[in-house]
Image 1: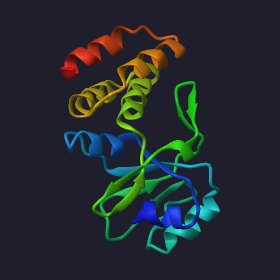
Image 2 (image 1 turned 45 degrees about the horizontal axis):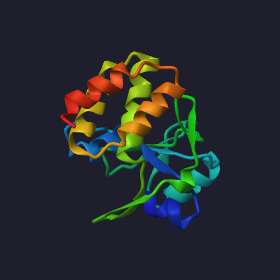
Image 3 (image 1 turned 90 degrees about the vertical axis):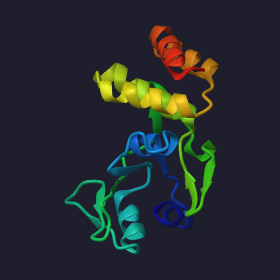
Length: 166
């Protein structure tokens, strides 16, 4: 519903982070929030999702709904993974039984988790990358190229690929 409301309001917002991991890992990891990366103003976002019953939490870009255990957050764009930025308009829509969602690809999900692992020393994101890689087709050549552009060793990509069994 959130994705459809955003699209209907001409807001380009891409689902990423833990929610993407939840989807691409078949719930092996379950996120408590939905991160939609967007460069849209907080005012426009607020007006759009208030129609769905979401209320802003303080002055943040986080919104809660009284009937939902999940909250929705809008990290500011542009959509990026380390020093690599992606045009969000080129992110494909994933058709679900609830409607279409603009969501990062499984490959971008893996590199998003690797970026968090490398730059924030977050071990949990390494485990999440493994869970996604086990279940999804990953463009490993893109992952190697991205790691090189980030000045990171290909060793972690090799380990991740081996652990995924692919």
